[in-house]
Image (tube, rainbow, N blue to C red; front, side):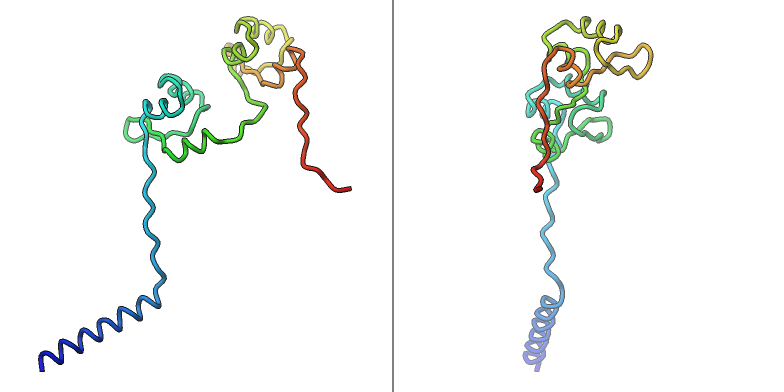
Length: 154
């Protein structure tokens, strides 16, 4: 009698499990959380110095980061997306970046901004200048490439 009762319970359990499997959708496997990289690891992946990442973070310029306690971390998937993002032609550059781009001294660019020869941006009166890449091209006499939209049918 006990053997019959045990066999009946096993059969009921199997049938209930089979019907539940048919009714309930399959649960997707939990995704692995992205790897969190420290500043040194992220800098090595980007090919820059760690202090450059700290400076980009201060200027809100570099890849998005997050704080874990008092540590700055970078998600590996977001870092890869930032590396592969399309670059726009109207980047805003600091004086040093503009100097590297034009191969001139940064004071030359600052003087041109103060004199009004070069269109620059200053957030406050004594703040450093920011310059758009297109404005630098115009100032240097280089014609920027023509940006054309998608072809339209007539």
